[in-house]
Length: 359
Image (cartoon, rainbow, N blue to C red; front, side):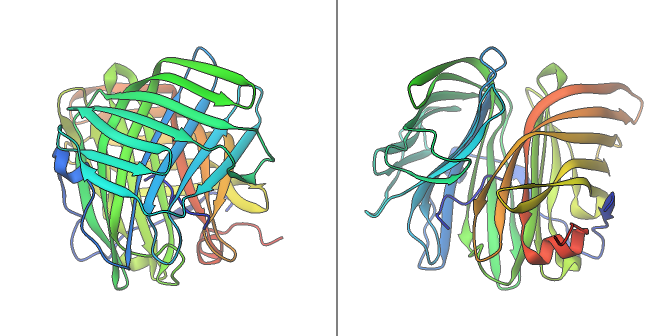
């Protein structure tokens, strides 16, 4: 689940039982990725990432058209081949241009930035963070991302995900895909050719700075054979009310899913980035609706935070995963070095709940 675009234990497994009903998950339509009607309580952003094996560059970005109580902004996370990481944020003081493209999806403008579905399952993404605020890692210079992202698996919509009196819906328009284009970082331009990529869209009446929101887990992995695994979990102050899902997709269809009561996330190897603790190792176990069991270990390969309140941040983590998805009479899917991202929302509530260090 992509980050809010606003300038805004040891291994401890979190059991996710006690939810009255599973989060609804259905196949996404282009209109689900388009802008949604809202009011002053509405938050909405479009997110994408790409990992290029040739250049070694990874990038994640969001175009945040609306944020309850905060200005619109675009955010870019950078993971350079030499190991340096950066977060830059570009507040946009003028109102966004929100529309639907001819393909039925988003046609979003935010200052110089654009997120447009130009054809079914194809998005043109342009973010020019000239003059942006360096949030973490120092100042990388001017950052410009210009990408074309093509979906390689059918999308889905999960939600609404409820926490307190707020709710978030989550459209995963491209669980896995490819991206081509360029990313400029200061004087250097990185070409992307067939980079593995992902795109989602969050919207609804919610405010990530609210005390009703305790934290979230999100992850997405590009698996062998054109498959993908995506997890989204919202955790309010009362962990018994968590909502979300785990979805395995293939190139042509959604293969299986698990509600929040059927999977667990564990945390270990705590590290800090720009003062915020995050787990450098996450374990994911669960059982999908098709009977297959998931056992994966996600290891951090770089992390950068985006503050979202007084003591909280969304830590965006580039990852590599190993493990197996097996059972139900099917050949095991062995996962070795699967690229992807995960996010840990490092809030005081979440850190205390998950057993993070306190100093």
